[in-house]
View 1 (cartoon, rainbow, N blue to C red):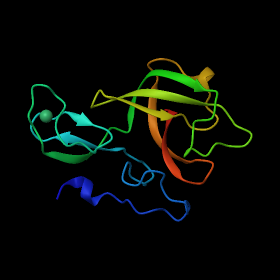
View 2: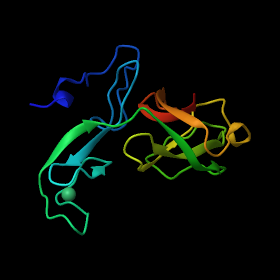
View 3: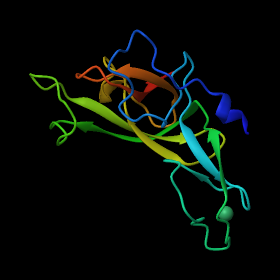
Length: 149
Ligand SMILES: [Zn+2]
């Protein structure tokens, strides 16, 4: 049993609708995305569902669940000016939001995610440190977002 098996993944009472994607992140105050690491070469993956290592120099097929870095560098971003398709439940009227591509501190992999409410593209700068946060979507389901640190 690895450390990640000890992670609290039940739904906190304040978010009755639960997580949008159960098992993709922890639900504690300092949330982590849950990824996978190849036991043979150490390559990280997110999402964690992998059947074989995609490193061309590795034939690994065994993975362990790991908590990924909570922080990273803002690599790029865009403004979502149109509502994403279903099953996304958009606010009505629709409120544009920023989507950030963040390079995780340790793993050096890029993870996309929406930026927290109230932080638009005008407040983002390349290279700034971003931290993982949890925020409810319009339908009350909890998901990870990026927040400037
Ligand atoms: Zn590998």
